[in-house]
Amino acid sequence: MAQIMDFQPTEHQHVRFNPLRGDWVLVSPHRMKRPWAGQVEKPAEEEIPIHDPKNPLCPRVTRPNGEDNPDYTGTFVFTNDFPALLEDVPSPPESDDPLFRAAPAKGTCRVMCFHPHTNLTIPLMSVEEIRTVIDRWLTELIDLGKKYLWVQIFENKGAIMGCSNPHPHCQIWASSFMPNEPKLKEVNQLKYYREHGRPMLMDYVHRELEKKERIVVTNDHWVALIPYWAVWPYEMMVLPRRHIVRMTQMTDQEKDALADIMKRLTTKYDNLFSCSFPYSMGWHGAPTGPQIEDEASHWVFHGCYYPPLLRSATIKKFMVGYEMLAQAQRDLTAEQAAQKLRELSEVHYKERK
Ligand code: H2U
Image (cartoon, rainbow, N blue to C red; front, side, top):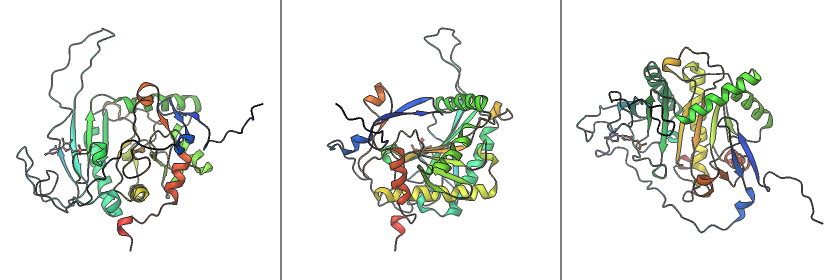
């Protein structure tokens, strides 16, 4: 007779629901034991100069389009010279064909340098310097949010994530339409709010603070955790302790504390495999533009970090095969990933004595 085992989440496969996206992830922790003979990424070149006169994001450099970058000392923002979204373009013809739908898409794209030094990254910047980045995000969000329905601030870090330039920077794409990811979050947060009378992510962060299984770092205002439904091995979410609907609602203390949590969590990331940890990260909050005055209590402002690395500085998780054809799958559980990150030092490996 077959022996019936008790379910152990670190041993036995299961599916977990992501209430923000309304989809499921397959968790297969037993696969962590399998041998690996797949692709090994070459470690990124670590020797980055403080200033590169050929780098178009550096201060005092003339970009290929002929524009001169100022001798900036803090953050620097310019309109992307190769933008995916433009303002003055013709709209597609209207059509009610259900199989060939198109709609107008207007917008603008900006590039934002975090610091004049090319060899810095967020974990290597001071909390005060990160705070200036947050302040500039707010200036840009307020400016672009007057007009555009969605302002997506995102950082692509590392060549493995398609980042073309080592200079510390992010991008800001503002659009007349709501992109798919925030649209899913809009629909699912609103549904939860109508059913429960409370914002989903405030309920979620309070439950996580009670459970303490997936928390990585906290301070007085923010909680960084591996979400229960994480897809990427070391995916993290940054959630506020107070109900903040949009980034612009942060107090000065919350902005300082956000800089603190960003530095601490990215330091842990770098310490995990002793490398400049690649990721795509960005912020989600209530829509802006034509919806800026709308009731948005279902929204909770939060950050998302999506790093690709799995086993080392050179072995990444591929979202291929089953993920493309069926659904997202992970091996390491969210709890195991959180524990690994929690146990790491908050002193950056490059700054250890
Ligand atoms: P990524 O490394 O995340 O791709 O960001 C760099 C951005 O900078 C990219 O979108 C822009 C690219 O279009 N860029 C300029 O706008 N001007 C330049 O001279 C170089 C790069």
